[in-house]
Image (cartoon, rainbow, N blue to C red; front, side, top):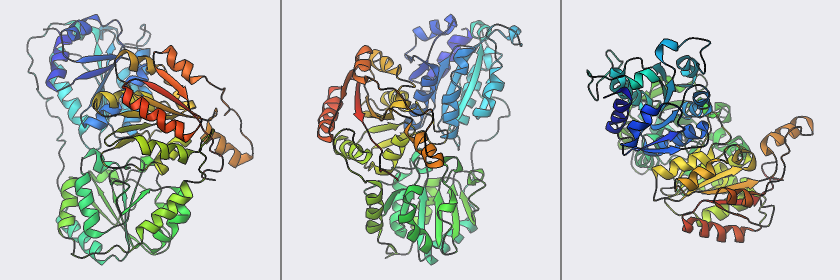
Length: 537
């Protein structure tokens, strides 16, 4: 068995069902893959392959796998892997490399990939001996999934893939690798948090992504209901508590700061679950009014970050922590806040104006989408004003899941992520929501969607501009430079890739088209002329 065959066999042993990528001259690897049940999803750009693996990893809670050839193929992975690093997504990336005796500066297509990827992965290494492939992969999968999750990159020199190997053990471990387990929380700290929760007159909960990636939504709900705590989520935590839950206030945002001021002024205890500084949520949002105790619940102590300044940190298995806290809650607890009234005030502020004919307003678009999208379903969202619209005005419910790029905030994420989501959840409708700026950054993956039979609906909120950047420039110096985009004929573009496309002019038409697109099991582009005028201003 050569190194390539051992690699594919090892991936099969780890339950890998698909690899996203683009082949190069590593013929031996693809000869081994030809006889494998693993599906190779040939993309049109390696960045998209990494985004697909990211979304696949988030939804399956197992590393998504992507592949590139050496040199420019590998460097094209960089944005997608950095995105996985900052959004805490388990990904294992594999790249071909020049033979080991040619790994030096000046060699054609050689880049030191281990060094290149080191700052944007949890582990980056070169496999120089084919007999180490099983152990290296096992370690890579462990590290990718360990809290906090993230990407791994392994370089595979072509001669290592071609070399015959005899002394190997499938599932073997690298000698001396560190333990990836963590201990439970300090019992004294746990008791202190219980006492503070029982004493608190006005607690508020802020939830990040951790309960979603730990699949602890049921435990979170029991905890929230046991203490009757008004709950906000971050963008990455959206959906951890359904937004139709009577204690859910939606996504925390500076855009609703006026409506939240009374909440935070009165609050005397802030409890965060999975707070992640990388999301850009600043504690200054809640450090107003009363003195507040701050409790941080997370998977590892290192997760607290420099900004939070928690009085107590509980680190460990978040499900176990939430269940233990819920079990110690006093009976008969009542909410201290009229949550529905505050939620309605936030909703009014974020949903105005409602314009139902072209160009449509953001809230009109998200309301139409919410009317049609079933439960379960998956939404992937790009970066820009469209992300604000989906985060702040789309009401996630039930088993729906919504994936953002929020740590790195990578434009071009939504469409390829939707393909990864479709492969992870083949029975669920998948809708990618983008602005025209982000959509055109990876529009080539429409062809990938059609060719591989991975139907998704791409809803494009088109304003012919880099709308968020334009708004920032106008707010700063009164005019915009470099933010105007040309008009695009998106239905014709969709047809060129074998997809269906249409421009909608009213919310009624949008609803009808969404119903047809979801039922058709085909790839669609829905062009929605959009105006953000007067929204969040």
